[in-house]
Image (cartoon, rainbow, N blue to C red; front, side):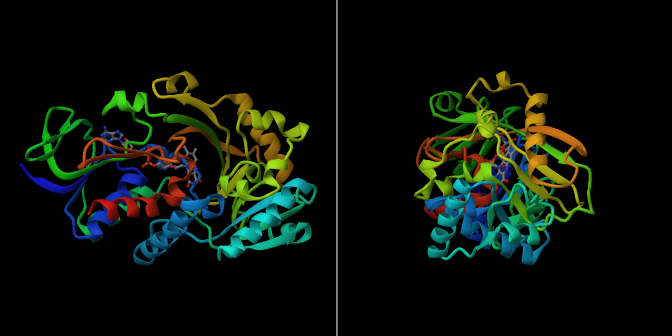
Length: 380
Ligand SMILES: Cc1cc2nc3c(=O)[nH]c(=O)nc-3n(C[C@H](O)[C@H](O)[C@H](O)COP(=O)(O)OP(=O)(O)OC[C@H]3O[C@@H](n4cnc5c(N)ncnc54)[C@H](O)[C@@H]3O)c2cc1C
């Protein structure tokens, strides 16, 4: 039986970057993906690569991720662009937090510019002056095209580093044997590897269901909207807003964060975990999101797989308060899912050769590449 140095279960961004790092060390690597192409969180998302929103270890991994993306994009076009991000504060309290954030990031060496209200609307012409109190612009943040990135990345790791990819291959069992870690595929075929890393996203019922049930993992459902292409609108950067300042973990480090009070007009939005983000794709379309609802392992179906109309309406109403283009020009809506864990990621070792690494939450595009490098450095 052919034996690999590493088999990665799951061809999303996390699995693919584990394969990338191991293959760069000269390891013989196979990715097994259950679907005929990955369609999990990695293709359902915004594609904002925003270390600016991360804190502590994850901020550092975000910076590493930027370097990795830059290096890959220099070799081949995988849809990565560096157009930066701007966080727009909408009131005095958010503006105070934003100013503190700017200083913290400057001290950490992450370049950013504070913009007063006039500078925000001068630089980002589609932001309404009635909304903007000020902003922080991060020129280093990046963007990817979620409907393209993973497919281009998988092509790249195969062509450049000899990674093998097998799709429509669901792994249904994995155990240590004297010959190595043995994986069983649906259909009962067996494969062997020295090491296995399982990056199975929010799929909990194929492998180790009992472990996932007691893991503390939960699934977050996010509603997303996408406009028709609007080439006449030039956003110029990822746009994140006041509710994001109230939500992203980086801002929690700011002394004034704990003093933020929720104004009446934001209460219902916060109840549904809504914060408004805009991201323009290469075709001119704009993704607008998002909301958050949660379910435990085994209960995800109870959230319903479609979008709730009233949540879309709440998001679009708030979006219209922020920007001057027609946010009702919607071409598509969908609900995306990701797995998250109270420890920021679920790390569980079945044995010294079989490792589960999943539940990276809402930061996988921003920090997954750096995180996978850290895991692989610990394994080989
Ligand atoms: C709506 C939305 C917006 C987001 N926006 C952003 C953003 O702007 N920036 C950011 O940084 N992050 C964002 N995220 C988070 C990011 O998308 C995720 O953190 C990341 O994609 C997780 O990658 P993953 O590889 O762990 O999971 P996935 O992409 O779900 O991949 C897991 C893969 O494993 C496969 N698999 C599972 N079980 C098996 C098995 N037994 N055998 C074989 N294959 C298996 C699945 O088919 C799947 O392809 C967003 C997520 C969502 C849903």
